[in-house]
Image (cartoon, rainbow, N blue to C red; front, side, top):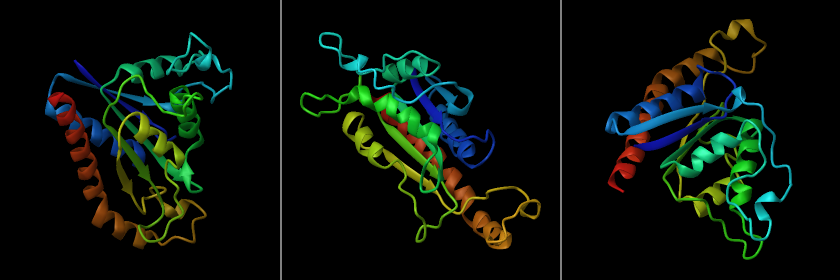
Length: 215
């Protein structure tokens, strides 16, 4: 049985990021019943970022999986044995959420060798990075996954990147102080693009599963 781990770094269980990740999971599952897809919501876990304990770098006991134990430990151990990885986050202030960034510290720091500065994960695998944002393709301040995307590419393989732009922030704009946005314009953009974004996510899941099943 092959396994794909989906990491949801967004706080809302049924909104933009969660919907994109659900479509990726559906796409991966549609390829073969021999692929298990597991989704982990980071906002449901109690964990810390890198503690700088250096336990992953002890001579003779170095590890490319974080050694600090908390609620994130079993997730990191599962990723080390997985066959595919999907990461998804809304963009806040130009970056992924704090929960996603904290997760990435714990995931990637053990990969880094301070002997030769190489990045080595337990195994290479296909990766999809998902971003959902309020910005437009030609007007946004997103750094996305930032330097972590380089770490992922070096250790796991070049990721596929999916971005859903100009997403709805709330279901009813009349209930919130959001006067800087035109709900009509947001609705029009969503009507034109959202189903396409979801279909792209579904196809990305299929592609990942097809790569995995060919190995």
